[in-house]
Figure 1 (spheres, rainbow, N blue to C red):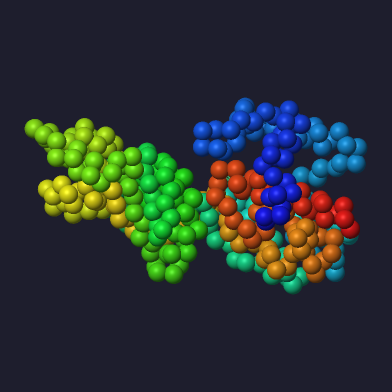
Figure 2: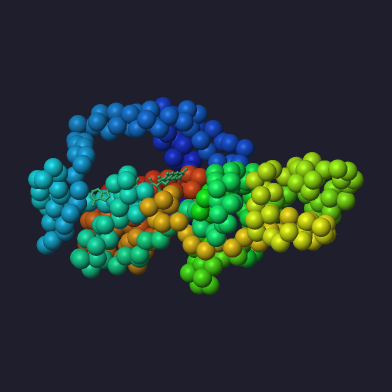
Length: 329
Ligand SMILES: Cc1cc2nc3c(=O)[nH]c(=O)nc-3n(C[C@H](O)[C@H](O)[C@H](O)COP(=O)(O)OP(=O)(O)OC[C@H]3O[C@@H](n4cnc5c(N)ncnc54)[C@H](O)[C@@H]3O)c2cc1C
């Protein structure tokens, strides 16, 4: 992947977009965005550029359903089309969001011709927790803004979402592989949330010790620490009532709230999947060693990345390598 990402880098992707007529800009977090977030426009410009080549033919709705004796069998509206293709780039995606067509069934096809693949697992996904019925009902789809999520020695800041089943959102996507693997290994993942990442523990204690007056403890937390309703509800959900009378302990809990994650959400809901064609089967151009001339690209190869453009970059870079590989044959 390193070589692919070097040979077709984020700068190359921006240049390619510019050539299509799409300007990009760098956001405050360093991520790159198109100036206009209209993906339809991008797709139209891309298609226009492709069809301007008289050798380009596009056959949508053709599903690869079988591979036998070096022949590819496609299905299109009850018709089967057989192709002998010396040069192929397969880009059949992963197994998440199957409604988009990427159902990962191709694993069986490639398996049937001796290509080793790694089973799919959800990546960039939400995680389930055992919420109480009251919490589930009250809090569904509330934002947890500005938190820091920690698992082991890794921490990520960002915004998450409390859902009826558990937790979801940027920091959880970012650590999804580690959380998923920890659940596989230990039956659960114990994560820690810092609800006030901009304040030190001492600052939290000092603010809690401010005169409370007639304020309820929730109002005190809201006024002194600017804790949102969803953060206060979460704090109440996963802790004992008694901690609210013990400010040093409450401060520690606010800075290090333990939340147990029990299961990843089903792969159908995940943004991407881990698994796919094993790197052992591929050369550096992502060509299948056992089938010279047949290449793979994109999420069907067993690499993984957090969402935020990294997945798309990986797809473009691997596809670029495949084309370079074809040119070298
Ligand atoms: C909701 C959502 C949000 C996302 N947000 C981001 C983001 O912000 N940033 C980011 O980098 N990435 C994001 N991604 C991930 C990114 O979209 C994917 O990683 C990327 O599209 C994968 O590209 P691909 O070409 O490998 O596969 P896909 O885009 O999945 O395309 C594969 C194609 O192959 C077709 N196909 C499958 N099986 C067969 C078959 N047997 N025969 C013929 N055709 C077949 C499918 O129908 C599909 O059209 C997001 C994904 C989702 C679902």
